[in-house]
Image (tube, rainbow, N blue to C red; front, side, top):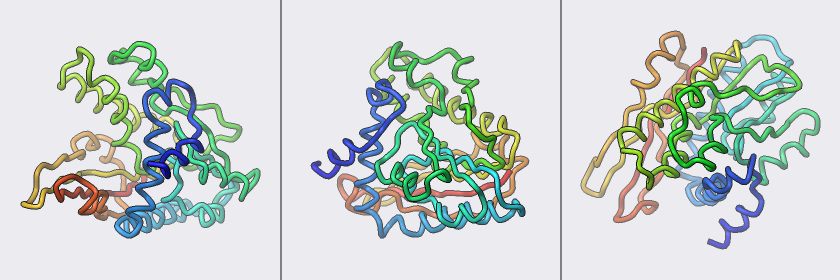
Length: 265
């Protein structure tokens, strides 16, 4: 708990509302889990880094700016290697850990942290505590950047976007089916938002997750139906398994794995 508290003090969020919904707390918890599960996560982090480098290499030319959504922790980002392909890298997230913010000092004028709510609904949710209007969910506004990116990457964040908003609404009058539809709408809006940049996009996301007990499989979630329309015109670069919660992380000996894939569009 003390370690997580110190990480919490180092987190910076886009707004007071983002802290209210728990984004600073979740970022601090992620830092602690990364240290605790480092061995189990090693393959996933290496595979994520390799997929990003492969996607960047396929661009051919070098220079310009790269925009990476989900860069608030940066554990899975090969920043030094990507800087061989781009003049600047902009990390965009609703919350930034201290180690991520320190990257801007390691590479001044080349790496930037841009606090931004990619969903566009967090402040609204904090003020109203009900499912936002569909028009607000469908049309997240792109941030103003000094240089238009020539490459965009969304890294291990797509299926995470609904978690805290849905949790914030869990004790309201919204029905479970409404919350599920809201969560899917947030993911679809993110995919449309990626297309709106009108530049090559690398999407790294889980496509399924599995929860296990000591006795065997408990349940499985398949995200591919949500992704199906987007992936029709995308090329898969790689796919791998991620032991996100190894035995000992969950109660009663349970564990959780995810299937992750990288796409270029």
